[in-house]
Amino acid sequence: MDLELRQLRAFVAVVEAGTFTDAAAVLGLSQAAVSRAVAGLESALGAKLLHRTTRQVRLTAAGTQVLIRARAVLDEVAHLRRVVERSRTELRVGYAWAAMGRHTRRIQRAWAGRHPGVPLVFVQHNSLAAGLSDGTADVAVLRRALDDARFATAEVGLEHRCAAVATEHTLARRRTVRLADLTRYTMAIDDRTGTTSLGLWPEGAGPASVRATHGTDEWLTLIAANQAVGVTSEATAHQNPRPGVAYRRMADAPPIEVRLAWWRDDPPAQLDDLIALTRAAYGWETRV
Image (tube, rainbow, N blue to C red; front, side, top):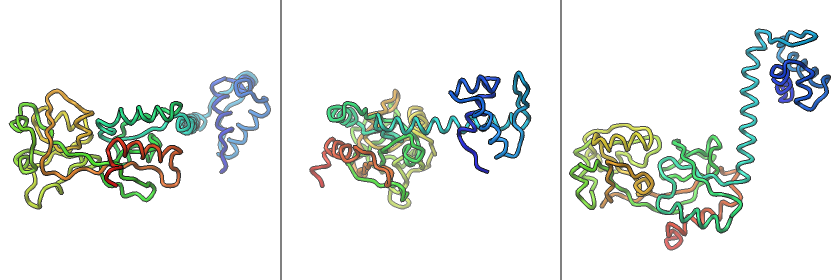
């Protein structure tokens, strides 16, 4: 069964216009071409889709079902075209919890100076690949390992970890917090996209209990209510201030590696420049 987009477009146009003549005018085709396209679709599907009269057309039962799917297919094709077109006019950088933290605006300003016609746009996407997989992003900011051979990555910087506690929590009075200070409390952890796992603590010395969360907002809401504490990157602390939540620097937690990721077989044209600007903002060039 060989279906063609032109056949689906003709079928939908006929239904929406009400006649083959009007559909031909909408599509800029001859009436004969529209008729052939719809007939070809019916032949490919092996089903009659329209009841035809001299004045109008009506959907058959099969045609009603096909119309729903045909519109969905055409919508997806239009979305794909918008994705490709958008990728030519802007560079989208996805992130799950935070963009570049305190470096975000500096990188955007530097980018605008070099590429005034290609905006650098940050988009939040709570997934492992931060929007790369479904085309939401052209590049992704990652703070945890991505075990997927489709994507290549480059390290661009390091970030400190911060504890997040309710402002009335006893730990909020401290300037710094140690990992052992948190073990008496329930730890909010997002196993899917967060940067914290029980591996931060020595075996058998982790938090008293764990509360699973799903994304930044849920995580912050639990902490603000003093129902849990958390550990996150300094970028989260910078970009997600929340009434009722206090962030305190971790004194003994290892730093977080920040990486940029992209499709291995389709890197963006300006990728090298983005990597260089990001490393400069993080001061990574002095480390490598």
